Length: 624
Ligand code: ADP
Ligand code: MG
Ligand code: ZN
Image (cartoon, rainbow, N blue to C red; front, side):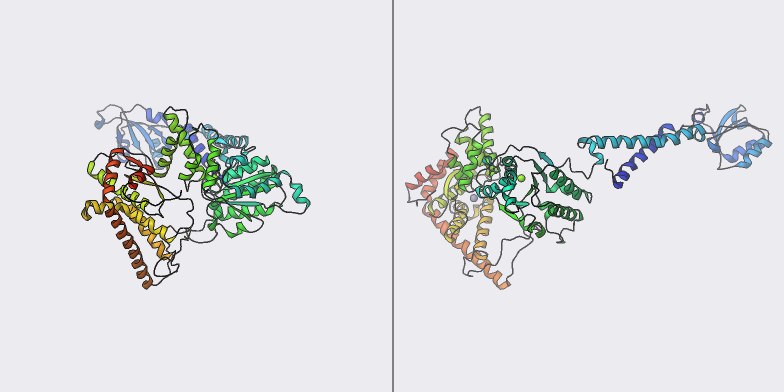
């Protein structure tokens, strides 16, 4: 039975209070006689009462309530000359009153209140501790009987309810796709868990801790489970945020419990999700120190040092913020191995789609390659979600095979939000049509621009019309001319509004486009050295993790340079704008035609768009 003093006080206090009230409320008798005595509510002051006594009008005095109240039977002219019972509040302790009453030979009776009744007193004194003992015993029993559910009242510091243990995860490496490097790294770990002799024989030490670093949804948890599954060992998991509790010391004791259980079940995997919640750099001062977190982290470090390298416990931690982790965590002997799990590339996405398509009925006409092509930036979890959404959509339509149509609709929905109702207002619809065709036209005519996938007037999320592009895969390195093409493409919408409707009629619809344009131009100047200022890096993307975005501007240049930067940004955007407007003007005829088609059909797909445009002008070939 684990019971610390803190817990004892915490729980016995309310019980004492509650029992006290029970005792007071249920057992303390109320003086019914006093309340029920049949008197007609008449009262009299103490002074008047004394006068009455002097006059000999008082017949009888009954004293109640420990001498605080008296019921007086009196006759007098004021009382209509008949005997009446009158209530008198007596001043505190009036012993001379009693003597006086006796002297005047008035009938006197005292009614002690039941409160001072010896029997009641005794009972109350006995019952109160009894309640206490029974109450405490009840709590003890509950807390020692079960360690989960409502019975955990007494077991604050125990983490049993908070870490999960899976004897068999049922996940194997084949369920994890697209992150082959990380998988290879872990095959060794699995071998160690299965055949530790191979390593210990040659004196090798296996790392105790592996840190999985990667954005959310890339399969970190899945991978950790797969290791346990492959090695056929139990899987203990807890999330970093669960360590951090309101009470100081609870987190540390949870760590202790977790490792105690793990040692009992070795070999096993201990998985700590979101380790950044406890393991962030200590003592940065910003945001206030957190003793609890530091204690928890210290305990974690102690535990990791405590078990010998070959006990068979491997701690796997996951985070997407390795930059804020305390360096003590990354030291050799702790999480000295780091494995990066990144958002998958085309091949990775294809592999993940294959894994998740396995248990779904997908039409044979669907090429997973096309889906993988359309989903750059999707994580494994996004892709799993995508196929699930498509399956739900299929079921809703009462079809029995998932087709490309449902998958496409799901992608659109995940990327741009829910589909809205088609627009009706013809004037603004026309303007939006010109805006979108503007984007699509510029995007198609520029050789360096991503391929147009479709243009649509069906609103989605915040957008009232959308032009979709199929991004090329290699987004890691982008050339100057590619960025310029993107700026022009983004300006295409506003440029079309200007040319067709005139400067006065342009709308706020382009604000998002302009934001992107400005940001791209700014980065060209300050980060990529793509302007007349020269190859200088003036701002870095690095963010101080303890400050909010925007609060930290890593700019360390003079005001003079700042003015130059602004000039260069303006210059880039202006140049692109002029070129874009020119292209729109040159293609006005085909734009009008495309707008008519778009308004009629609501959506034009990329191939149709290019086919129509091709009749009027030469369009560059693009590889997908
Ligand atoms: P993380 O822990 O990195 O946030 P999870 O491991 O919880 O991500 O992934 C959530 C879900 O997404 C998994 O259960 C799985 O269905 C899917 N998933 C993510 N990455 C992959 C992958 N590489 N291969 C297969 N499925 C994946
Ligand atoms: Mg996870
Ligand atoms: Zn736009």
